[in-house]
Amino acid sequence: MSHVAVIGAQWGDEGKGKIVDWLSSRAEVIVRFQGGHNAGHTLVIDGKVFKLSLLPSGVVRPGKLSIIGNGVVVDPWHLLNEIASLQGQGVDINPSTLLVAENAVLILPFYATIDKAREEARSGGKIGTTGRGIGPAYEDKVARRAIRFCDLAQPDLLREKIDNLLFHHNSVLRGLGAPEIDRAGFENSLAEITPKLLPFISPTWLRLDQEMRMGKKILFEGAQGSLLDVDHGTYPYVTSSNTVSGMAAVGSGVGPRDIHYVLGICKAYTTRVGGGPFPTELFDEIGEGIGQRGKEFGTVTGRKRRCGWLDAVALRQSVKVNGIDGLALTKLDVLDGMDELKICTAYKLNGKLIDYLPASTAQQKAIEPVYETWPGWKESTQGARSWSQLPSKAVKYTKRIEELIETPIAMLSTSPEREDTILVKDPFLGR
Ligand code: GDP
Ligand code: IMO
Ligand code: MG
Image 1 (cartoon, rainbow, N blue to C red):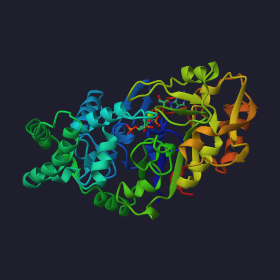
Image 2 (image 1 turned 90 degrees about the horizontal axis):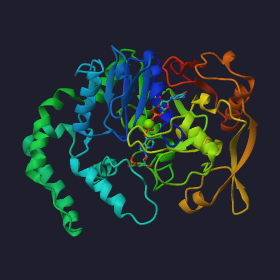
Image 3 (image 1 turned 180 degrees about the horizontal axis):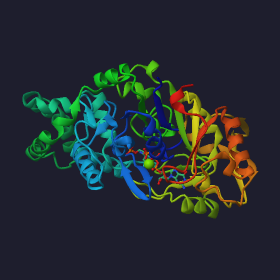
Image 4 (image 1 turned 30 degrees about the horizontal axis):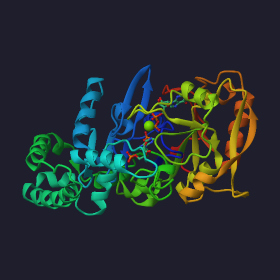
């Protein structure tokens, strides 16, 4: 029995939601293991659009169990709103179909304020965070002062924790001359939602263990992408969690041996939203065209995504740090009709060729991409559901990607619709 981790292999928005939704027909349990509502995963099912930020993308499939794991930082107000909004779209969500880890950390209302204020005050390049308090939540987690779901049921302990938390944050706010946190208001709003949250809370690691023993298939759903990983990404222009596949184990409470296949999701080109280095970024009408055809606007913030050529160097690095077994290549259709396509196969740094993305921000900004050029195709790949429906030049482009990143393509996506997907190798069959 195989369990599969799906992770973004670029800077996020690779189409993880679509692929997880598709794969979840083959799994019984779908688990989010990191990030928070900074994610924006769009699913299109028979023309109906579902936008998810916090809930696992398998939630739209009846009869599946969705789990928000301990590695996720959860804004409980957002969680209740997202549940209500999906229920409004006819999705059945209740405490038997959705569980939230009792040891997951809460995103508190003032985290978003801190997040935005810090971005504003930042000297040098802005990170361009989603402003949803993700950074402050993970900071409080590692500083051991965060509030976790299990604390909500323990009023005395919760008060003590709030003392600790506010002592820290109010000291900082006072230093900045900013207004302090209104304790009563905060406590009241938390008390108001606690009864609605408690039914969802559970030791999810234990449930996962039981499900695995019963032979159920688990799908671990990553958010963001490897180049936004706090260790392996373009630091400091990253998110505050580990986004790589190793986190699937840590962030859900299973052992690393329980992940049998790592599926990396990657667009047929590259995008990035927010600040930070992007070696293959296009500033011309070609990039503009990709953005228009690919509808490259952020789900969470509505920001325009920066677009560029496929960066096979950074992608190969993602393959290595995640242990990617197979790639799901998405949005090939967006490249239809282009005269030629470029793939970055190396970087030039101070006149020398290098075959990896260096860690230093200065070097990441200084590197120049080295490209090879491939002929484009005029035919449409949109909606193709078999390899034989693809023009030969599109097939050659994908074969070259496989060669450069030393990894096979396991799935191909040719439109936002669930069923417009080509399966080459079923990840649930294992490596
Ligand atoms: P995620 O964050 O990785 O889940 O990706 P997003 O949902 O933020 O962004 C991917 C966007 O591309 C969504 O609007 C999807 O509906 C859309 N999409 C996914 N796969 C394809 C594809 O193969 N072709 C096209 N044209 N759009 C796709
Ligand atoms: P999905 O799951 C793309 C980016 C933000 C910013 C940086 C830090 O939809 O692929 P944060 O709010 O996390 O502190 O912001 O990370 N970012 C994403 N970019 N897709 C995402 O998620 C992202 N989540 C965060 O734009 O540059
Ligand atoms: Mg997204």
